[in-house]
Structures are given as C-alpha cells and as structure tokens.
Length: 251
Image (cartoon, rainbow, N blue to C red):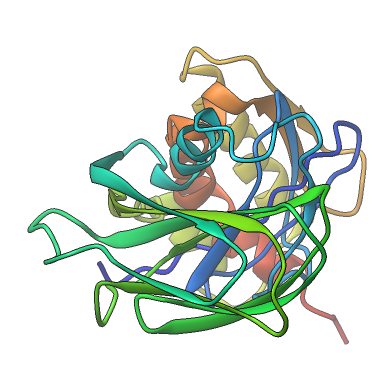
C-alpha cells in the first residue's frame, strides 16, 4: 500500500477537527457515537489523547471498537495480543499475514505517566492519565511485527495490538483532477466539487450531514458510517486534493 492515511478523531460530539494530508505513518483515533470532521485542517502527525471515561479500564470491548475505526472498510486479522501491567513490554504479533497492511494498537491508561511507543518500526509517544486512551495504527507496511510500550516511570496500563487490512484509497475523480490541474481552485470549481461530494455521500445510504458554512468543508456522521470507509472514498475521489489547494494562501 503506497497511500498514507491520516485521520484524526476526537471524542467531543460538537467539535470539528482537521483532516490533514496523508503525510505521516501513524493514525490516531478514539471511538464515539458521533464523529465530526473538517477537511483540510492543520493536524499532521503526533499523538492525540482523548477522553475515554465511557470505557471501563481493561474493557475487552474497547480495542474492537477502536480497531474498527482504523480499517476504513477493511478488517482485523488474527488474535489480539494483550499486556496488562506497569512496566515496559514488547508484543510480537508473529509473522505478518499476507493480507495485512498495518498494525493497530490501543493503550488504555490506568495510571499517570508518559511513554514511548514503537509500532511496526514507527515511533510515537503519549502522556497518560486514568481518563485517557490512545489508539494508533500504521499507515504504511510495518517493517517488523513488534509493538513496544516503554513508560518513563512505571504506571498501570493495558495495551492491545492486532494486524489489520485497510483497502487502498480511492483515486481522484477526473473532475477533481481537472479542477486542480492549473494549480488553482475557483469558487465555481469548489462549489461543483462539493456538490459531487454531497451526491457521493448521499449514495452511501448513511446519514451524513455536510456543512459548507465555515472556512473548510466539514461533515458529521455516525461512527458506523465512518468505519465503513464509504465517506473516506467520497472525500478522496471528489474533494481531498482540491480542498487542500483551496486552503493554500493566495497572493
């Protein structure tokens, strides 16, 4: 898989967040019943903590909910590997399955402290307290099968890790490519692209609310709609590159 994915979700019902270009090797995500998005924001890379108070610590249902949000219409593969404790740990997921494109990891914080994480060869970090959890997945093929968590000082936490398959991104439509070919996006071109995007999400059968009232195109949906991958493919096909170009500073 050559296309990187970077989706940044926060468990705050009324707050839109940025959906940035796919330039990093990790995604971060947390589960909620309603997710709001804005396309073209400034969030690229890094770890994001998010309130997970609705989930009991070490609840085995949590990783399944989180990992579904990484697969974008794909699926998890094999067993979930788990560690419960307070010290450094390295989980070996075993030989990479032939259909695996990445690794998903969820860290549920039971105590307070900072930690370093390596997921399939990609490094990240986080700061825990008992109300937070971190979900991450690789967006490019991992270089190994290892997931390690190294606390700066011991604190209680649980970590789950599993192989995943994520389908390839949708290709930009000819209309989107034509609109960005000259390196500029006019008001009319953007309006037509948003119409195509709205038509595309309407055709998914999910309830998706598209909002064009702000500076960026935004939308909200149920988590089931987002997990399906259908909305992502509408974004990729019709507006992703165009909206990024639209948001670039103009002379």
